[in-house]
Image 1 (cartoon, one colour):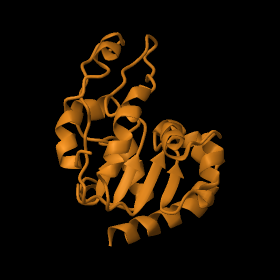
Image 2 (cartoon, rainbow, N blue to C red):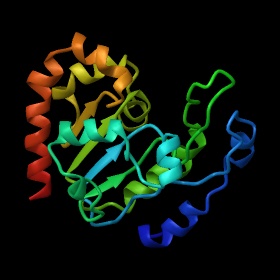
Image 3 (cartoon, rainbow, N blue to C red):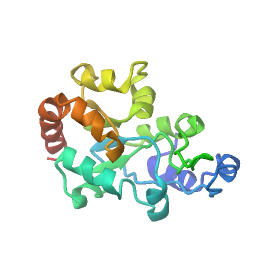
Length: 197
């Protein structure tokens, strides 16, 4: 089994999905967004990089990231500190857009190939944040809706919190589910701060 530092060059050079991406509307090349270090204490498991993350090679460097940092109660410096945060998306590359301009789903081969060895290389994790349905299916085996999974956050395994995606497209979901802000977010912020101590 490779250590994470040994694994990272292979992950950054991954081209498993080159043909798939070339066939998308964006016709882009693989460019894994890798933000990992064995010292990390908090895992942010999400969906896949969007176009901005793909271009900047930095996860959540957009309005969704602003909202996620607010939810967590962390600064940008804390969020991008490799000794504190590790990012494990369901796919490390931007999946591209379909013919209508909608985001394509993360290719399953990415998580099948990389999730287990990456997790093995993160021995210091104290908290896992599972953002969105794809991450919840991969890490929890969740077969319920996102709303049901997140609403049952107290039943998640110790050290794990399921969250909706912080996309601004989910503003209506947040308005319909006020318990998320009143009940879950204070606990999330407390657990994040404890994990970073």
